[in-house]
Image (cartoon, rainbow, N blue to C red; front, side, top):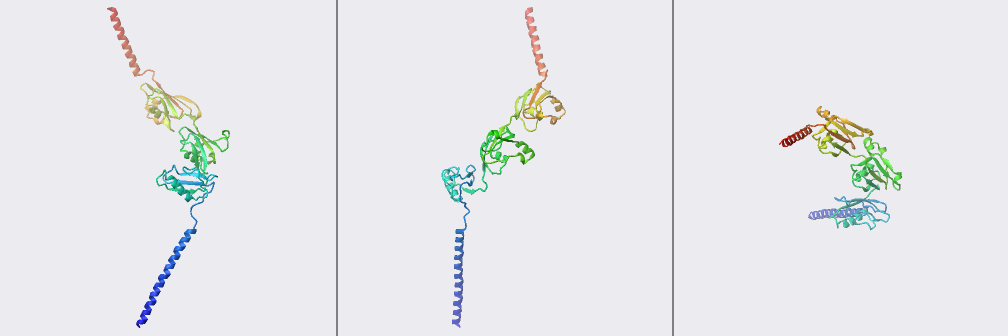
Length: 323
């Protein structure tokens, strides 16, 4: 009976050892499979070829983040790495190279390089923009996006005559587009189709964006005008009327609707009736002249003072002559 128990125990022991022995080869098999899987799965890195457009992003550094095109000779226009070819390198390899180069000027740079599916276009933007020069945009970019890439337009920009010169064309073949009209109507047909190498010139507006205020005001001169500046607003922008101002005779010279207008305005009447909001609006290039009163209380006092002085002097002279 005891021999039988010993035999049974030995059988169970071998069974457990067998189970462990089977588990170990299976784990080795899984590990080997994983290694082979990672070895043969293609890398996410792309091999760089001439003509590709690369998006280089340096984290937290917009100045060093650029979109560049791989030239036919394999080089790219990128700081610190302009002379060596990047062709046949992977994007991962280029990341490492650029990180090493930039480490000399940037602390612990994180560089990401990817290939853009769409090749951006380069457009030269000149004239009344805040940052004239070459901008790189999507091939589907609109005229507004291009101007935004140039940091927007200046105050004196003429958006009604945006000049466009296509690549390999002269100024005599230039086209003009009314961006102002598009912004009012939203008609996409008013916008041009842009292509690589185009030139956009934002001309200066011929009209003045200022109103000229003259006459009996405390600070005559030129003042900027917005979209809705009334005669009353502009008067007090010029320091308000002077003591001898005649607000019954305010002359307005302008060109509403393209037609020249020249008329006298009784501004005092609107003020007395509390209807200053009904006063006409001024536009860029208009002139406002505030006339003086023919006889004012101040002038009357001055005349009276001069008269008294003259009479007193006459009496003094007469007294001296009698003596």
